[in-house]
Amino acid sequence: MPFLNSIVEFITPYLPLLITGFSFEVLLWGTHWILIRRHLDLGSERKITRQLIMMGLTLASIVALALALPVEASSRNQIIGLISLVISAIFAFSSGTVFSNTIAGLLLQVTTPFRIGDFIYVREHFGRVTEKGLFDTEIQAENRELIAIPNIFGLQPNLYST
Image 1 (spheres, one colour):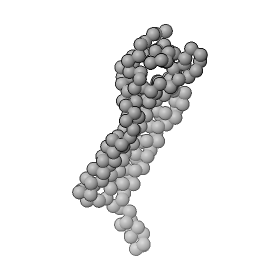
Image 2 (tube, one colour; image 1 turned 90 degrees about the vertical axis):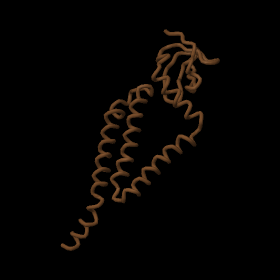
Image 3 (cartoon, rainbow, N blue to C red; image 1 turned 90 degrees about the horizontal axis):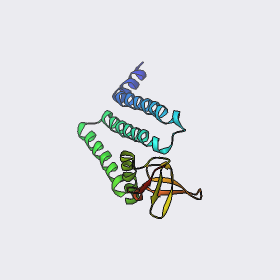
Image 4 (cartoon, rainbow, N blue to C red; image 1 turned 60 degrees about the vertical axis):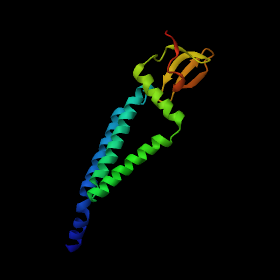
């Protein structure tokens, strides 16, 4: 029995971390199944909100796991600061065009200057919008060619609705 007691004493400090990790794993898996896996037929335009929800829940689970670590409060604060620094570095060092297209894609989702099926003219390209994504908008030209236009160019198109 002393062996069993030593195992229990070893695991007890890590119990909140294990429970938090398991809970968030179940939450993330269930949310992914409900929002994304059940709706594989959704276009990228309708998946953006669902993917942002998943990203937010993932970041929340990382912070919750850091809070559940069996360490002193000062170490826990340093870990949370490190997580914040890594997230900031990802945004700071990522490509400027990727970041610009992402922000433009979010703005296009919020402002909705055009919808799927509308005819738009962006720079030298004219066609029917077939898909709106986070990074680019896909249009079908008159010759049926699919053209992916970065969202940064599509913020103020000349719109010809159908």
